[in-house]
Image (cartoon, rainbow, N blue to C red; front, side, top):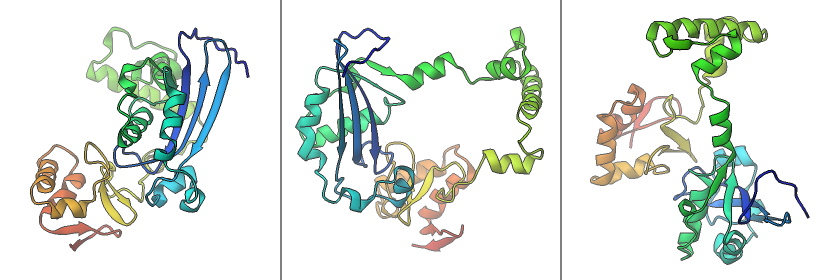
Amino acid sequence: MKTEFPIALKRPLVVFDIEATGLSPRADRILELAALRLNPDGSRDDRVWLLNPGMKIPVESIAIHGITDAEVADCPSFADKALEIYSFFEGCDLGGFAIAYFDAQILNEEFLRCGIKTFHPEARAMVDAQKIYHKREPRDLTAALKFYCGRDLGDAAHGALADAEATLEVLAGEMERYPDLPRDVDALDKLFNPIDPLNVDRMGKWRWVNGEVTVNFGKKKGAKLRDLMADRLDGHSFLKWIARSDMPEDTRAVAENALRGYLPTLGGGTKQA
């Protein structure tokens, strides 16, 4: 298959996307890897791998990508296909949408677990469609004022009063442009700041996964709160760091309660561990 592509290629470009068991490059595993390799001569190779992660797929992840345990039960593992996948990517640049911080990293972690230490996504040229989109279509106050109100913020940009006035204008402009939007604050809050029932705190720093409260950020993403409580050295140090941080009160409260021996409950209360 020949593909017309507006970017000159010195090396093959693999545009890829990954579905996984979760959002931690280290703790989670790849379920599906789709890769389109565009070659400098215009030819194209497409591959899709459906993989058995060797772990139970969280129901929260199934709700997003629809891949179930039964669907991958008889599929090969990543280790079974590692050399085949590595060969497909070998000598290629990388492309995708928001791949730098997750897709490329989880793929590298899978290779490392198989003893393949030369994938090195950070050393490859990368074209990320999301980065181009965000750079060329900014979503800041200046851009919003221009879009909704037809004027520039000008030299007053980033003065507090000017920014507040501009924001008020943008809100009015949004109401005019989108007549279907609700006209009261509570309804707007519910629509645009929905509370995810799987979040333990409003910011989602703590999250329910398979009935367990887990860390949802940083190096310990995916760690169970129960395990942190049991680890009186590193685990307690992490909990104390959160408790003393400037994170929101409800985020800190989970850590504070855990240090006292209490776990959150699904109903919003606490129980003794």
